[in-house]
Image (cartoon, rainbow, N blue to C red):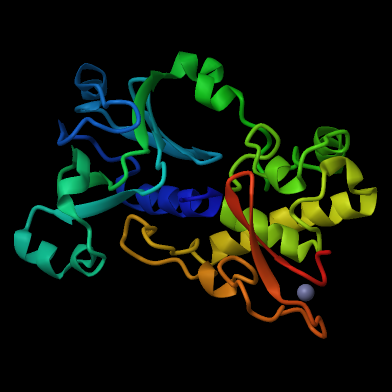
Length: 286
Ligand SMILES: [Zn+2]
């Protein structure tokens, strides 16, 4: 599932290709996503120019010059790819290598020289059009907590949100209304870096641990973005490139391996907590 770094990389690769470009046509190939793509709504972006592209948490927002905004959530397996109008070129492009299964294409946005296609195998993603004037009251965006790399995500804010909670810290840092953008993979890595056991309750952390955790969240997210995100199963950016941060995983999917920390005799253990896998070192995160 794409988390903040993968969505940020997708946003950047989209920006490189489509910013300030005019939409020539919009074709719904298959409307069935988490919420159906609505033809009568999405068509208003035809002949409009893309003014800016932003990311908020795991959402991508594409702003058009008529004050329409397309809000995109990639769900579990959503991805974009480009095709050129020249079929020969298409055959040698990245999309063959990456095994895009075209029957999972949902939306085609055509520009002058290429098409941008949204593909989603598991159909948990969605694409919605909203009006700019409704942006601040949008249900999906309204409930989001601070961006992890923003100044608003600081010690005072974080402590207030977690220090009185009798809830496992891993669930708290994955709670999108506290800090937005972390999913299961990065939450596990962040807790390892912080030497905090995933199941310990938020109220049990002292100030020093909260500071370390805050710093670890920022570090891991920043490093993952620099590495182009992580490629696990389905994630490629819209230019078809893989991320490489998965090579830096210390605990995620490392069950049974020795802890990478110097002189730590611990073994990485996997358990299930709140219906999700947790990975942690039996020694330095005890
Ligand atoms: Zn360890």
